[in-house]
Amino acid sequence: MIKSSQGWTISDSSESEDEDNASLLKPIKATSDSNSSNVPRKYASPARIKQKQLLQHTLHRDHNSGNATKSHEKIFPGSQTTSKNTHDIPKSDSQSKRRKADSPSRDPVVVWRESLPLNYVLSTVTGLPDQFNYHHPDTPLGSLDIKDILSVKFGDLLETAQFNYCVNAAWFLEQLPAHKRQIPILLVHGERAADYTGLNRDRYPNLKTCKVELPPFGTHHTKMMLLHYKSGLRVIIHTCNLVAKDWHQKTQGIWISPMFSLVGSADSAVKSKFCFKTDLIDYLKSYKRHGVLQKWIDLIEQHDLSSAKVVLIGSVPGRHKDSSLSKWGHLRLQRVLREYVEDVSNWPVIGQFSSVGSLGSDKDKWLCGEWLRSLSSAKVKKFGSIGTLSSNAPLKLIFPTVENVRTSLEGYPAGASIPYNFSVAKKQIWLENFLHNWKSRYLVRTQASPHIKSYTRVDKDFTKAAWFLLTSSNLSKAAWGTLEKKGSQLAIKSYELGVLFLPQRFYNDDTKTFKLTSSPGVKPELVLPYSTPIIPYAESDEPWIWDIPHKTLPDRHGNMWVPS
Image (cartoon, rainbow, N blue to C red; front, side):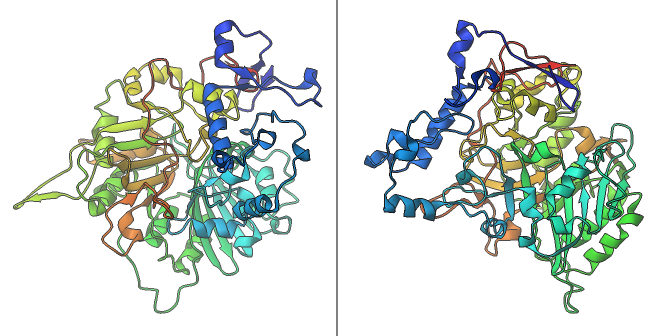
């Protein structure tokens, strides 16, 4: 029995599979030099086998021309090669040159530059070939590890403030370059979500803590890095906790700002609508203990943040009304969309998340009521002197199934990061009518369990998107807020932060949408983290619920899931 840090018990599977199970799962043989008695059994699902085949096709594009050979096939990560004497196959000069030319760039600055103009990347996934990490010409979206982000490649780091939910302080220090572990570090988190085990606080007097006061059932869920360099300031908004597992084999989203330089005298008065700088300062001032953050507020004031084209969408605990009613939560998103988005009637809203809160027994009270109304917002239509608001869009939601979790690279332990309680789920069975599978074939991340949260509005053919939101907000009232007192105030329980991408703010022409499709030599303007078209749950699919045991089929590591 294995006890995890989340309180789950994972049991090793020692029972043989029955005939039906054997048809679904194929054991992956250990290498010949392994001690079979010490190697855990691993399994490949049909989805994994298909992805292996896809990967083989991608890595060997010359197969159809007859140049490929079985003796040097590449197998999907986690499985073992079936070839023998692979090292005996001579590689031609042309093959070697081609592979060198096609090799990915691991330079984080190159990865970031290739992400322009959106500055949006994923996290790397351990176990994937390099072709699907960092930057590669054949991969539409780059990825970086936390060590890449904090590396000297991005600049001479002087100090940092890290805002997060779960924090392992000792682990985070190890991600910094060794000579940067004594710089001033501020960790901003909730009362109980940080782990300082194994850290000698006397050795690191430079590490300060800001514990955020929260209402009942509220969380400090924001994930942001403020990085002050010798050459300027950078802001990073992402979806990863500061713990090892979140940067290991999950699908995560990261927005990395340009380097902000000091304000010039001519720039000090330049402000735009939904100004990133103003909104970031307002967010930091919302902390009740923002006195410890005043240094960072002052630093932001001293820098020119006008090159940030995204719009901040934040949530702050409290009951917001009057002039603050549309400052936070889903009403903030509604306000921005009404300013920018043209009429996109009947385009569905897609929500993708890794946790579900209590939404009520009636879909129309919150989810398909006030929340969907905000995400369906667009510019007010004018008919003569009368203005009409947009009608609610069709809604599609992406949430991992039990099979997604079981066949993920992590196996069942991935489910510890996808909280959805049975006591909540049984009261909102209607939610399953909106649910779609997590698939990410193009980015080869179907089996990298999604911890990313994203929301968008796309056309029916998935060729265009009106906007895209990368955020820490899951599907919950605590994160987005719920209207009270006949709509006169918005109650929010958690701190959240995200960045909204609008095509009008990134392109000088009259662009109204992002192109999601590619053409020869031209990449899509926006890459969604999942495959399209999205696929509704089949009758046999079940949403992942983390306090339900799974003892029939083992995960890829031979483990069962037994909540304690």
